Length: 424
Image (cartoon, rainbow, N blue to C red; front, side, top):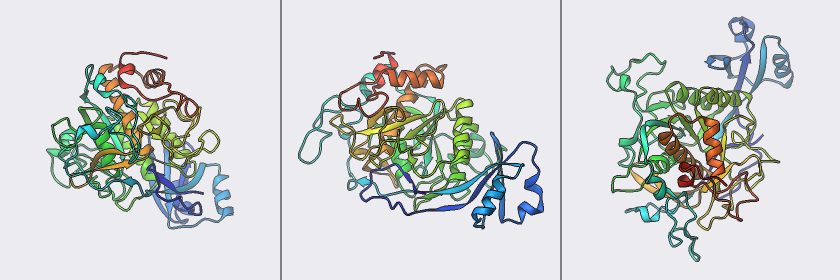
């Protein structure tokens, strides 16, 4: 068992000895009434979960023996039982806070070569997502909702406050009341599944950073997102200290789908496989919601050493690796000729952070929202496009530079070529 981590570049290696989970996720077979029986309730604390793809329960405050797990797994009324894995954040590569950030520093949008290198070397001009040319076609649409499933969003940030999705019924409703009847109280900008309340404020910065890459306002201050026009839904399932549970990741996906998200941006991954999480991603696909996932940062081949959710075999899932300013695979990025679909900028990415700030971070976490934003541009330009069509367009329009060709199914994302339907 391994930790599940936010997909940021690591300053230190992750301890492989960590074996963290909090109770169990149980899926019942259709028509089962086991959940109501005393024998099941006596096992521990039971939380009933009705997802779109089945009846579940979270079983906590209990540590089952191998025999007890086997007995439950073999119960004719149970489809499966699995650990509810703890998801944790790891350190990220960050610069000191930028007091006066400028678009000129955002090499992922426009790489001049001078703004994308390291201390002693330059980058390579043109190795970016070709945003400026894409913006000649579209800058997005306020009709497109991108859910950032992460540590929340600083929705008061001057670069994000005008980009937030809002639940109008709750915004104009009565505090403490579920005004729209969706099961969540005061969920104005999204929901916090880590603390079970309607305030998805980011006390960590990771989610806010991802949100800024997707959709920071083009407002002459701070930074610019891939999309000038978008609605960002803040969904928090990782606490401010960076931990969360698989069951809350599933709840987050369900919330995004039910509340109209077109895309979910998922900059977290690693650890053990969860059948329930896989089913949630499949249900999102069936409902027409794209799932964009980070490839991970353990420098490994996902084809031979899968990481999740990036490696689930689910239609429409789009897995993203990270590249640096020279157009090479970032040293930390996972890869895979079949399991990683595209690369996007992920090293030294400047974006928004909590409390109205700006910082540089590195990781496939940063590459993932670039792709979420680029796909958002495509949906804005072609509202009727399907997930499968969008994924094909994204991959077929990539730049196949020699530095990336051995590491993924396609190459570096190019928003302009994708919008023009230029293919390799």
